[in-house]
Length: 504
Image (cartoon, rainbow, N blue to C red; front, side):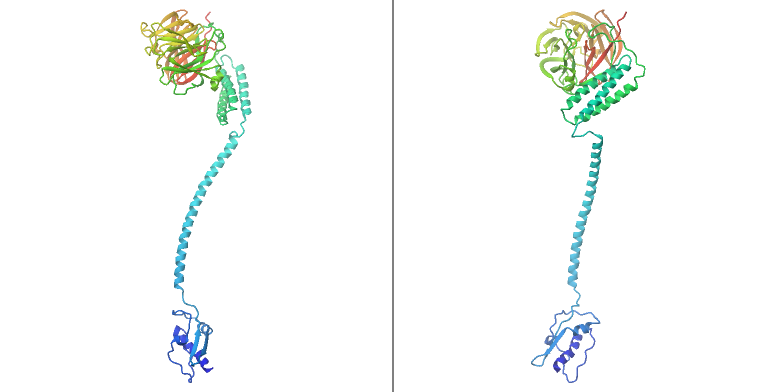
């Protein structure tokens, strides 16, 4: 028992040697023989490291509460002490710092991705907002893309028809502009009916055209009170009971020729038959892009079919040349390629039934019109029948007019003028009178010359002829409609002819 007490008393001394921070050891009793230096391995089994401990007020009490001691059989004091774990964990802190650094890098990487995502979200948010605005505008201001309200368009067109009818009754004298509007509105009605079976997007274009027509109608209504010059009443269709051409209306653009914008040369018109003057098919004969060869032509029974490109009959020939084509009594008359001959083509079967050489006529671009090649031989139709306008070497390039037998193509009579043909841009016949045009500028032609085969008189005129494009390639006159059919750089135009009253 005494030995166990001595072990307890020696413990503070040992702890003091180990830490160096505890108070001096309690002295043992004189009867106890304790060595001055006792190896810790002989009596101490500790679970601590060799590091120093920091001073702590509770160190002794804490240390003294964590030990066991006993004396073995040989009288040796054996003690087991558990020291408090107060050593600073440097390695753990280092590992913690490395781990924190790695986590910081990963965090920065993920944070940069978040910033990118935020920017992308901002961009897509703007795009979505813009798309939303566009959809709202489409819903409010445009037609439905699922239900096309053609009935509404028809009502609008009918209202314009009523307005035109009122304008015709209130405007005195010539109503050429109003008549033109009436024709366009009628064509619009046909287009609406056609579009009902076509792509829904075409309705947008038709609405734009309706708006343009409404604007023009309002302009006409606003100006109907202004003073409008009174024109003489037109003569009976197909009649020559007038004093000649006095004026030409503004052009009405029918459409681009059916082969496209590249086909700038050619001719077009309407068949005239004295037996059936109110009938007659429409024909379009664009030349190939070389401006010389007439290879294809197209026929339509009505103007509406021509406007809508429907019910067309296409034909091909291999011998046509130039834009001097004319159609009379269901026969087409053309200059035979590379010759001075004229061919008569039956439009019912596309066969050349008659060919006839035109005596002494210059050909192959010898005396063609100004700015138009390969039209040395220009065929024309008027109230009196079939004519041909050309030049000869004997006439030194001046214009020659011959009346033809439309059955045999034999020359019936010939007149010689003093007008040089290459200085003329084009020509046409009305009631046996030749009218020649010349170019003033890119937008205007002038009917400047006439030759009357009925009297042999010739003279000067100054009738303005407006045009849509720079060059006029051909002019054909229709006696019943009293219109000019003009082929203008690929576009099909027509004009109303205004006549003088017959001189008393």
